[in-house]
Length: 310
Image 1 (tube, helix red, strand yellow):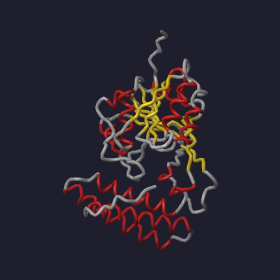
Image 2: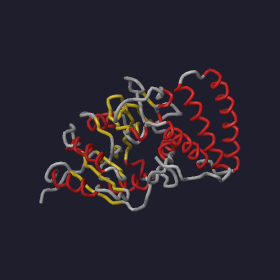
Image 3: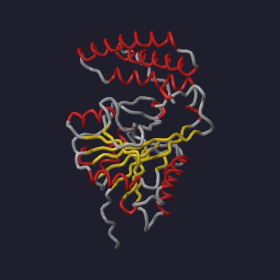
Image 4: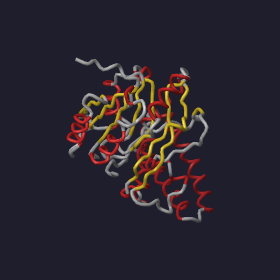
């Protein structure tokens, strides 16, 4: 029996009811350079569509080639799915890829080479280019890009500043860090609920321990953005739930008071900005920021309504 060598990289793809998009992502992986140094872990987070069939078909086609495993995680939530992938990973690097993202040919090689050359670096992120289903709306201005996970910090390798970190559509973390920290299951998306914050929490712990987090512009993925998300209602919901996330991350009385002070400052800042908002995009940004504040206040007052989906 042929024994597979231990992979350097475990590619974790968490998926929920997006089998057709997952298939596009999976089909792109065998052609990547250094794929022989990686394993692919498909974590099905309780999907009700044909995700299992797509995954098993891909595994059969890769028999004797790329090392692929299908995992079913019944506990709903992106954090639970990611944690399952981490626990099953054999590589010393865990690379997270969205089920609707296609990496560049050098993606694996870039991850390995960068982390091998920088032992002080514990996590990497890179460029996330949008692939719109049809066309980019005119109101989608630069300031509204992050909720769509559109990321390009330039062509120079550098450490992320304090208020920025990699995104789950394209990030790699040393598995040794996850021996101590897993993703918090009270944060992050659950099904179609637009919660977040689990990545921010992980990277906050990493920064507290003095671990370097690097932006690597050669680590590129193309990320699909469906028309269903290219609506003003969706982006407003996304901001509302960012506010819900912010509120839920502050549990102590002192922490909540500090957050309320920040919210008050934001209201003043937004009010000034609103005086100069002229374009459709800038006016929408004002509305979205107010939605975020509403989400935070609803949560702090225990009136957060978790019924919006996306």
